[in-house]
Image (cartoon, rainbow, N blue to C red; front, side):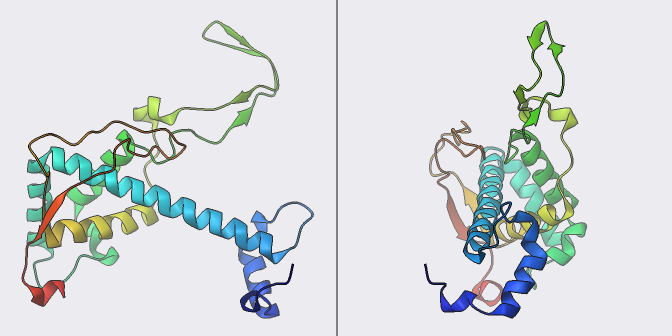
Length: 207
């Protein structure tokens, strides 16, 4: 297979390998494999961020008073003459709390990385032999969940903050948003979120 022109540069190849070399499959150095791995990582990141955003808005639509509190916090701390961005998320503790709570209730990856038992053990009366693959369900142990990374909070916080700052949100009907979880490794919603929004400000700020 011929390599596309955009990946033939030796300089670009070296730069990418330095950063992402750890993700190369053992014994392979094909740049196409590296690009594929990078795409998988990129798409996985997008899916988890988008999913968390959908859960956050769903929770807020089912708890409108929380949405109003978040809007008042933004209006007070930021005003309506500039947009929320990642550099000022530290001034919005309520927004950060919403993200923390969403990740606690609906972690984007509910199952932790698999582990293989190195010796026989007994767990709650069950004999588990050595070599068994174990998956930990972090969704079932809410109090022990690790806090989200600063990068996650900055990215989610700025995006969610913009949606809350610029628009009023409401459900299409009086029926609450269905919070049923769907199948998958990233815990998607069983039914995609449908919502109505209207601008809070004039075109001067939004556009």
